Length: 308
Image (tube, rainbow, N blue to C red; front, side, top):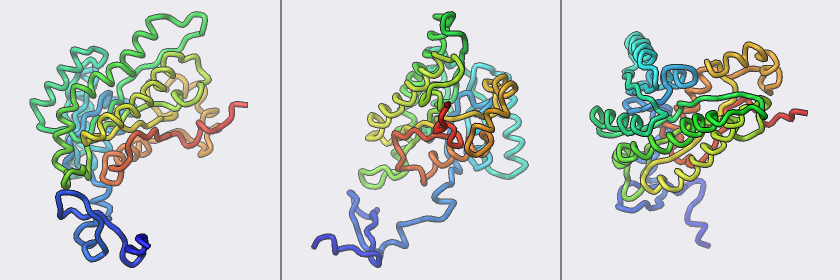
């Protein structure tokens, strides 16, 4: 009998008028529910840090946020690349009047000390951080019988361990962003951590990149662990498991096998800048606020294909 309280004509919604969320009828809906595109998908004014944001997928994501009005901090080991990317993006923002901006904040993200310094430098410039995108990474391919020990050390450190180090150091700034969107005791628009993973962390890759695929599988699970830990603190954690995109890391593979890779994809192509940026914009927006602990495959469906 209790289920008759609400109906399609009088749907339950979340009210924002009390200290704890309550269900109310449609009478209050107009003041509470906002489903216009700008409200659901806008990220204008958000503060974003993108590691590895000067090149490849990171550069694509950086442009997507700047074009849509965010203030983007670009970090990587290559200071000149950070400065160049920031200058290009600021010129683009001015040309398009997007209201976005880019700031170079270089750091060697394989170093724990540098991760701490990066967090400290950002805290001098910003009171809060809405979105952290952990994109920095490296790969290493070698035959099984010759796969070197230092490949494991390098890739597990950069691709996995330092993701935890940096996220941990930036958690206070992320928490401050979450507190700004609290209704009663519920965070409606949490801060976001988005990890750039790989379909090679889901399937066994064709290439002998043992440490890379293991590090990405570990990253996917670390993200789920963070989702449980950080969710109550007003921070979500999600992963994009990316397929092939045009980047320096993929350049040799695409040069040698590009047409075969496209042919093997159900959509017949590789990823584009719009694909990478669009997925991150969704996860960073109000529309993605209830997504937490997900590993989203961004690959056109290629991970589903049989190798036989």
